[in-house]
Length: 223
Image 1 (tube, one colour):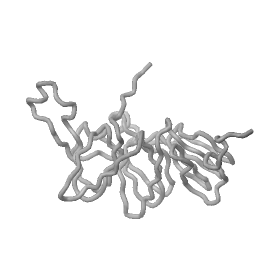
Image 2: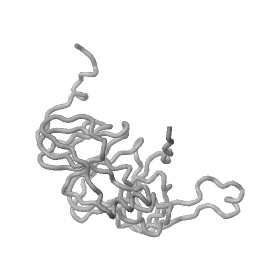
Image 3: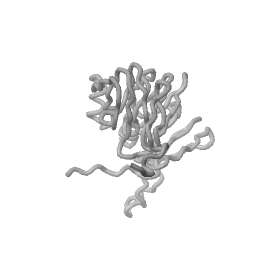
């Protein structure tokens, strides 16, 4: 058979080193030699001796998820082999988190990560109910984290003299050291007249970066 489909850029090659690599813009390849963590249901293919087990969030995590809708439904992948991960053809990006780094990520944007990283579901301080669902996942440690984004994200620097306001439905993540609060950019009179649709944002202050997607979150509809 002959086709452009079988070009080298589409052909999966056997991994030469363990860990996470970019397969293409829409998927992540992970050469497992031990254990790693991934979003439940995100595995699209694998080869080798691998076992997939649902990971418990613990009582605290389950309670937070039940109250807020935010959470990380994870599975542990153990053994030796190669696995590919993707989610709804979203763009995939690998972030190298170094010791001392701390990154806050919305749970809906997490795809997979090294077991050397730790995460905790924490309150978005000062944000109230508009803060991305009250709780986000904070990653620390040393290792790689793969995130997903519908479209190409925008990374905006935050400096002490120039805070950044983001739509809570568009924010993907930010440097965990940034201070968060609500910003109201619409007057009461404007709200009474119907509003602009941009009444309240999440304000980030300090030194770091914020990652936003190029559209607001599309509400999930039930059939």
